[in-house]
Length: 198
Image (cartoon, rainbow, N blue to C red):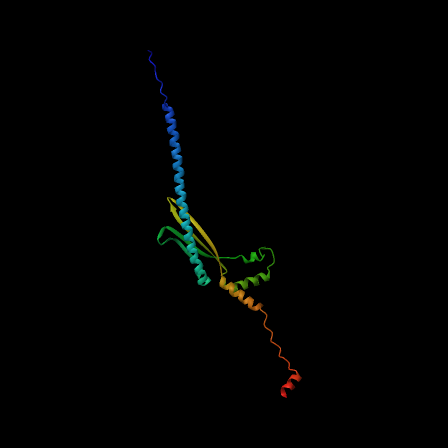
């Protein structure tokens, strides 16, 4: 009998190393995607929380805007104040006067043009009505740390001097209302007066 050699099919060492390299690359890519998914999930959660906290600060600003005198909101500035109970979040708040370029709005932005007395009259009337406080800009920024990176979200609100605007409109409406005419006295007929005497 002849000695038969059985041939057993198997992978060579090179094929095994290539397969392991591909498998390791695939595992690293999946881990990278999974890590990014966790990061963006955490970032999204922090961004949502920061947005709600910024809205909370803006709600307080709106409360003071409605409740207090408009001039009392002058130059509010809070820097890096942490939230109570959520110390990982801090905020900056500033409220500044927003100078309305009234001359530009009225079309007097050409420096070579002759001064228009109507624009000066309008400016004086606006200053008289509003006392120099027409609009303010409230800006809140909430920030937190994501490792070594500082992330933030911001909200801005334009505040107008609603009380003074309401008073000015009420005054204008009162001026525009026609005054009631006095009712004419009724003339008595002589016949009806004579009939009453009898």
